[in-house]
Length: 268
Image (cartoon, rainbow, N blue to C red; front, side):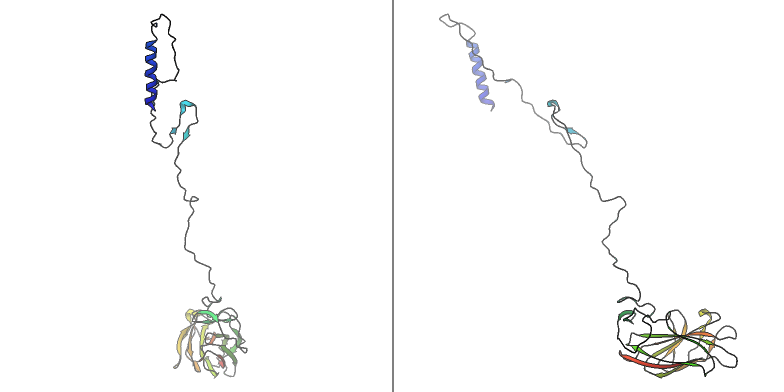
């Protein structure tokens, strides 16, 4: 503390003053002095720095190292990088289990129900291709417009989600009338006959559906007619005099969700 040190200083000052002369008996007075250090140095006050960016601080006069104060700028990642919390998940391919149907068909073991591939019935007599559709039908071959020339087929629908496709070519020959005819032999299901003229293709194929049937368009945009009963398309309209055409038959929508046998005949 400053007070005791000041008292010692005053005492030494008095002693010094008293020793300036001789004692009364004529002897010299021994002068005693004490070194208390630099008692006259003034206290110094250090002014704090404001810490400006890039400024240096420290006791430079004492030779100590100067410290540097800097402010780091936070980074947000690699330049140009983006992040997102949205995940699209895996892509669901048409025709795969629990995915949208592929033109009405699914992989083996699954059937198209409400346009979704689900587990279907396993009917032992259903011999249609596993991926049965308009692009992969059962090929029947060629037929003429002679009514003695026809195809007769039998099959099984594996529940309400199953659909069977057949394809044939009808040739318009001299002396006969071309009339695409579907004849139901057995079963309770829907039948759709889609047509495409050899000349002009789909764009120039015109079909007028008979009574008891409904006009329909196939997944490949071919015009045709659908019915639960036998029907005959008499009014065909292909460009020119040749009414040869391609025919696709789709058998679907059985009356019950069971193994449903059916039979039919196709004439041209």
